[in-house]
Image (cartoon, rainbow, N blue to C red):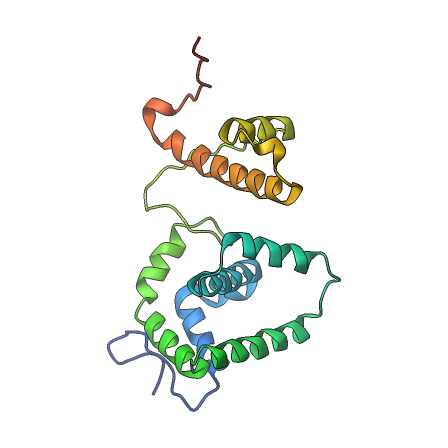
Length: 206
């Protein structure tokens, strides 16, 4: 069976091929042959799914940050060996979870073949080669690259949590990280509201 049906609809290739080789036609259907130039997007999507699995198993954001901090404290790995590690540890996790990793992969590949048109539309709304979700078609995004100083960030965290200065360094780092991410999210959202295009700091009461 071809990956193109008689009516022009895209379909999955036959199962005689390896799983990896059968993912490629799906990538081409969604992202064209240019997907080869989007390594950053593929890396981001991989880590997004890995984090979602971690979250789905009940693990917390704090645990995720601890693991990430540990990984980045160690020497750089070799890509091929790390891919092997991903495969091996995923198999081990599936064993303790009583899941068949191959069945789960086949089910997901079949599911995403039904989402090709939606993925193409979403991809068209994203900045070129960006791994992050795009905006709705026709939506205007007002860029705002303002970044707070460390002093401003600490002051904001202290306003939010009066015990901020008493926290341990790891907890303060976590609060600062969350504060910066929330700020970036709001700086992206607020300019979409006409009445808030000019954002002013609140006037202290008193």
